[in-house]
Length: 143
View 1 (cartoon, rainbow, N blue to C red):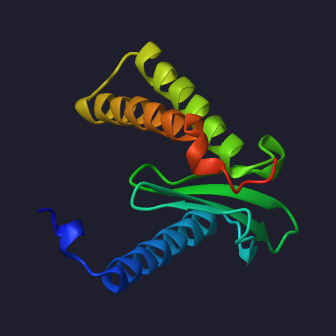
View 2 (view 1 turned 90 degrees about the horizontal axis):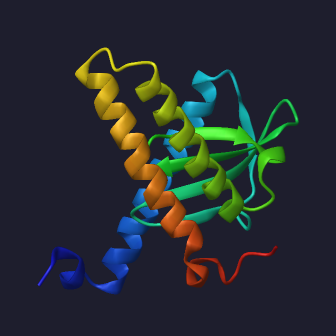
């Protein structure tokens, strides 16, 4: 039996809440590092796919809104104009990471760190795309 199966529903719920809180803190930190100060989170449009990824719709103090992806992948953000829904945002991040990995590899990998990062981007891009393609995960998302 796995550790996950041995947990009570309350324990699983608490772990998921902790995971969500950690992902949100990572999203806020990422935006702050980019000079973006969050003011509002749109919970109904954000998506949480524990323990893999969370996609946050966040409005900044500047008035601009962003999608931020966090979880077991690189934390990244984009302006809301790039995607209407969390599902579309996930696809956008997937495509962007594929392109970025291609750029790194096309420029000629200078060291092992770059190669590992390019491979991580490709791996996570494929994973995000698979998540975006699973209709059952997006049943409650308004188009």
